[in-house]
Image 1 (cartoon, rainbow, N blue to C red):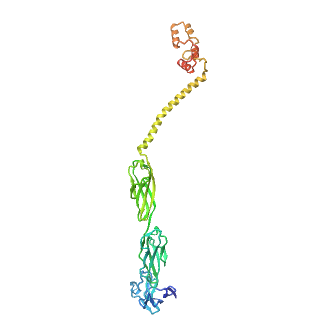
Image 2: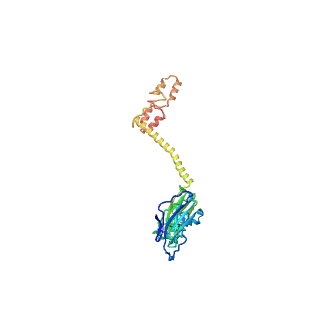
Image 3: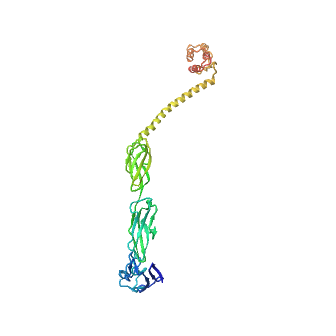
Length: 396
């Protein structure tokens, strides 16, 4: 035999090994028990002792009153012993059976309380208490609701204390009380931690370049409890630009550029966040900024080419002249249009035909001695002009 259940003057002893039985057979489950003569200053009478199947309900139910065992259960009890007899066993009868001694009871519904009872501010100290009424005494455990069916206990058999409570501690808490006669769960208590604005930020839409003439929307967000109120300001301006979480500027202009900040405020504090806004040029202005430089460049290109051509031509003329002549040196002229005549007048005289003489004189203008004329010209450019006016002739 082994003592399975007990506390203080309460106790029940059950068989130390599991009991096996065949289907439709009869089984006897014995136990011995003890209990105090008084509890809570009241005399305990030997009454309402019964067996129950643990885990089927929060409140223990007498097997004789359980419809699953109707007509199949008997108790054989005295002041210290009690045996449970179950006949016509069925598969669903497999369970853990417990005996409730006289005066013992499962925990009543626990109640929870919070201290301090007013508003809870972040950083303060908070204590949760679970109050239980049970004989024998029950153990209790604290839990926080978070949607997880397998909750991890926060504390056992002690008040739940937050030395410096944080916003993340907000939520619903409850306790469970359990003794060998049953398990009960308290109602939830809500913890709402108040705190000033934090993690304040400003976003802009559109997020790309803001073009002159378009519309821009600034949005302020903050984590705060209670919810924050928002006010918009522009740097170096005293009066607020707008109020509310969203600030919209329509038909933006370059003068709208600058630093904007929103102020998030509630009863617990305030916090600012700044955004630098840059308004770019509109489409038409941008196009003109592209067209004008292009036109100017296109106009300068022909002028530049013409200037280069003129410079190159002048350079070639000077180079040709300097390479073929020396200052004050006669210029030898070569006759291209007239064959090589040293004295055209003599040649014409040797021609007996008058018409032939006239044609010969017309083919070469009347230059008596062009080399001498060129030699008398000291200016090289003038010599070159003289040579260009009539192809180079030797002594005409």
